[in-house]
Length: 407
Image (cartoon, rainbow, N blue to C red; front, side, top):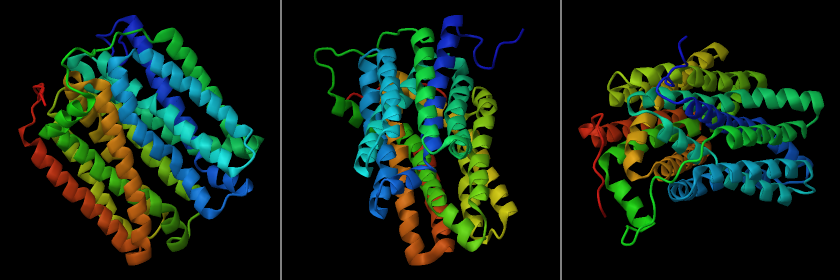
């Protein structure tokens, strides 16, 4: 009998651990995406002003972006399983708290806590999966892991809407806690304990010195810039899509939800297959070819005139991510084996989160100044230029290790 892709070199215990890690990332992202469409309504029902609603909405991803690098670095020095269990336990507590909040300020505090606890799960689980991945099949394993990561985002809005309509607005928050609890049990039972890959030694470089060394590496600059530039373009796309679809094309919220879900679903489904390809072909060119589709889709968006056009362009963006991310993640894993898996995954997550947030801000500002068409053209320009600069930094890339650069 054939085993699942990418797992034939893992022991049974390692395979079970990988499944649990994927489940933890899926559950956290599913829970977060379930409540995002409901948060503005919930906050308004608690008396929040428009500004406070926006602050509540942005608090969790902003804090998560800040804390990802910190917890990623801690995970290189401490036992990763303990950090995962603490983060999942905190998500359970925060989920219960959402049900019992009395005002909008309490909701804001819980969103901040949710960001902190989520930052203890996502980069640590990704780093652990990267360490479990065999060198010759890490594209397959990381493609499978990132598929679980994106699948949570894909399913969340639809699941959250169904639960809220059927059982009330607090139901998705309860479900979010239940998912975190299920992931907690799986991680506790299935994830093996693993000693840290790096240990504090006398004379070792400081944390800051090691981060500086990371950003001196051209390959890492290229990897971060490639993902960050496309994330910024996607932030512009996501911020403007609901408004563009409703006020320009006359579509409904259901249509918008379908378009967003389609992009995330395609990305999730395609990643395991492209992860396999990343182990047999040059990863740099697979990543470049995939991400090159993004500016193309952004450029065509201003001329979309109906739902079918949006569906096609959303599908192109889904293919773009599904094709590029496994190769890019595998390239990052290679460098993580040298610079610290948790540290590098945390920094990558932080960089991407900030780029996505900046794109949302730029998109909203551009809408007021230059309108939808030029805002989307700006997204295409940012993505294309960022990709070209990243390609220059990656000019010396080969599928080999990069020596550690001592600060």
